[in-house]
Length: 117
Length: 116
Image (cartoon, rainbow over all chains, first blue to last red; front, side, top):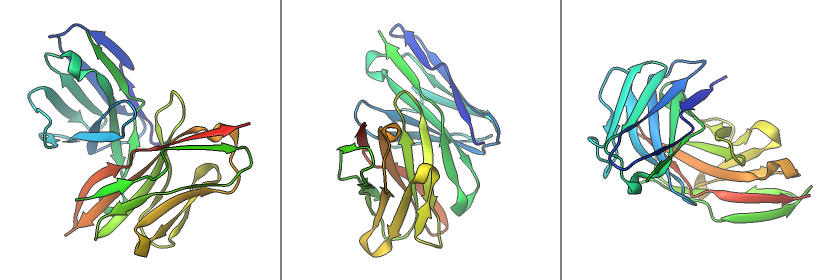
């Protein structure tokens, strides 16, 4: 149980284009999903918290106009990297939370490797 | 602000050796504690978690962790490692204050290599 998928697993795009990454909770409903970025040999850094039916909450330093997040249903959140540049190349990971309050646990997707040329 | 430190960046063990990975956090309030594992080419998987109650938590694949509140620690242990335990291990902490949760903060990870 608690399986989270991401699509695509890897994407290569030209500078200036937009890329959409999907995150789905396959066997549970997730009111809250999270988007992380992982740099090589570093830990996961939270980019934003996505709540179903409301605007995402972005972490300090994350441009909300560049990283558009939509959480239209309890099983799907999307991250769109707009006008991507080479410095946006990274590994993007989503998670979906199961349980509520003090019992909340995040389950992670397999990640999407983005390379911007 | 919350922070998590994992002291060992790389650990190399022979099969059947015992494992202990350190994790310390800084946060004065109530915490939820997690260990995640990332096997080569795979995504983060939950190994075990602590919310409350018995500070000794048992997880999957023979792993356990002990929450020592006075030391702000949540070390991961396994009595006898296998080659298949080769992976990167992340400690994560989520703090609670005033009924609201803080975000999940990850340590920098420990890369474990088990030699057959």
